[in-house]
Length: 187
Image 1: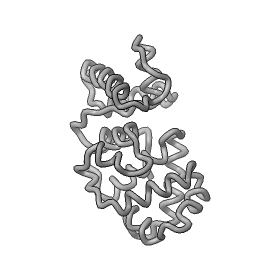
Image 2: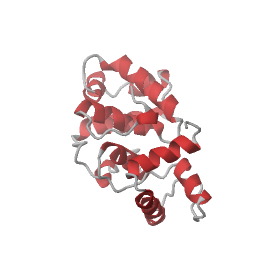
Image 3: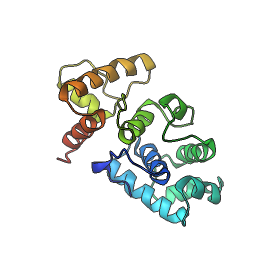
Image 4: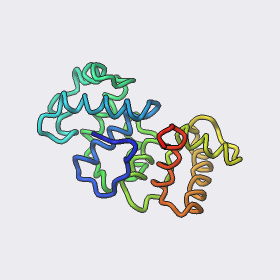
């Protein structure tokens, strides 16, 4: 099961990368602890002894959404489509880019960047969730209250985040996680 409090791991196996990406999809707009528990229930339901993507394929697309719903995964119809597209994509999760991930229905800038930032040691990207935006606002920066939808605005705010991460002396993943822990009350 994914532990959102200790999410960063740069030595993940293929199975673990698949599970981590599915977690980030489930966590989009949701509580990370709840998303982790719901995903674990879902993977236990369909998993058997297969990799997550292989288990999704073995179960088939029909009824995938209802299984997700039964496990408490929100927006289950959309997320079923995202899970299916990922399972059939052939993406190399160790090397794919944010642009590659964002070709999959339901994966946006924040999700692609969170996955890459927390699974690759030298990643230079930021997942602009509400905690990061709140932190940047508290630091005096003019930022939106929700993840920017325009690429230009996302890039502007992401660059502020990266500059502050550099100044902190932490990796982007550690900087991100420290802010999440503080602003979500996990410290």
